[in-house]
Length: 229
Image (cartoon, rainbow, N blue to C red; front, side, top):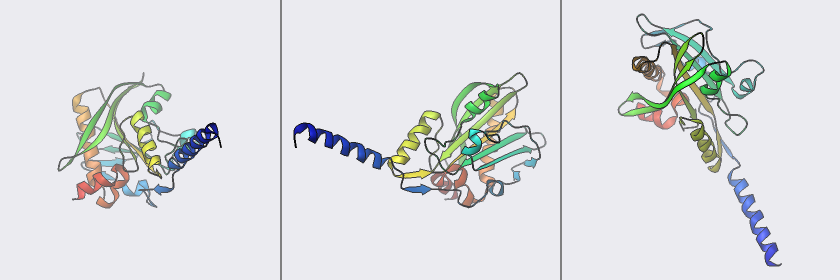
C-alpha cells in the first residue's frame, strides 16, 4: 500500500468517525406522555384563562410548522387592573436539521409584522435563579405587540438562532436528539419598560404556578431542580 492510499484511507476513517459522532443514538424527551394543556394552570397569579382566538400562531394546518410541532396551546389570561397576557406554547418531539423550533421573529414577520427591540433578558425565578428569555416588539398597521419568549431544547435554553444551532450540534456530538418547546407570552401595548416588567412578572408566575414535577417541560431539568431545592 502506497502513501497516497494510506492518506485516503485515513481521511475516510476520519469522515466515518465524524459521521458516527454526529449520529444520535438516544432520545431525551422531557414531556413524556403529558399534554401541554394539562400541565399549564388555568389560573396564573392574578390572571385567569379566558377564551380567545386572537393569536399569531406558529403553525397553520398543512404548513411546514404544522409538521414541526406535535402539540400547541394558545390561551388568553386576564386579570382586573393588569395587562391581558396571550400565551402560545409549541412543542416538537424531535429537534434536528429538518425539524426545529421556529422562533417568533420568523412567525411574526411572515404575517406582516416588523420586529424591533430584540434583546436578551432574564426572568427571575427566586433564590437567585434566572430564566434566559428574548424580548421583542412586533409592529403592524393594526397593533403593536410586546413579546417575551424562550426556547428549551433538551435541558438547554438558547436565546437566539445561532445559539440554538450550536446547542443542537453539541447535543448531536453527545449522541442524542432532544425534544423542544417554545413558550411565547405577549400583550398589545406601547413599548415601555413597565410592559416588559409585567411580561416578566407573568412568566415568573407561570412557572411558579406549575406543579414542581412539570416545570422541567418548560425550563429544563437543572433550572427546575434548582427551583425545587
